[in-house]
Length: 332
Image 1 (cartoon, rainbow, N blue to C red):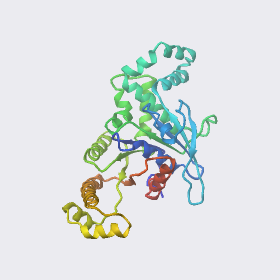
Image 2: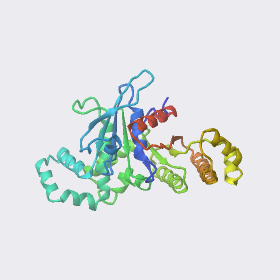
Image 3: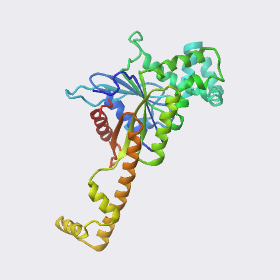
Image 4: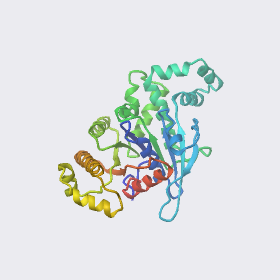
């Protein structure tokens, strides 16, 4: 059973380098099961989804990406993808609400749209989040568009996520009335509802964990719903507590290591054993740091999930493996 059965919009954020795009992609695969349609969105202009799934750069248009992770009976859903940019979103907005059509494209040629979205970052965020809101709120009456069971947003980093989602507050000094102000207020009803969850990705290092804690505090201060914390890139646990302590203290049994290497058919030399002992000490120190940071994550009082470091890098097979782990732990 999922820990988030009522959530339709999964917002994934995290400090740069923690793997939030990887986690967002894996979560989309995990949610797309039993015929469920899932939309995976990005808003940062990096074409991260295209690179992650090794496909051509995505346009401002929903595209079928791949099938999701099968359930126990083999049932799959479909993952669609969308690359959202503010300029295209503004053109669509002008066409829908002001019937500008070709006039809107003329404004784009003159650079007016880029100018408008640059001088007013709050408006830019309304346009980006507005497209996500529209995808979540669709219903079967709109027969020309896909109705999604879940939307996963690969969102801006933790340091900007509260500002990005708190669009009504960001527009307070720009627009007191009018359609954009009305739209932002309407979107906030979704973003602050139980149908939204903001998940934070971290690694077990001091700065990312602290930024995660600060991000949770900021989200709660803005009354935005905090989801889970995904601890990414966990190192394997090949040594028990006693062995780790011995490695840190430099008291591992050298003769036993030499005997094990010999038994495995490896030519033993003092340099080889010295190198292995140094690596073991480094690994033990790293594990001690991770354990201390894991204790801090546990104090955040939110559900947490762990994903391993993928030694060979992330490919599509690795994404499905991570999706399975997220499902096993109850995130999807």
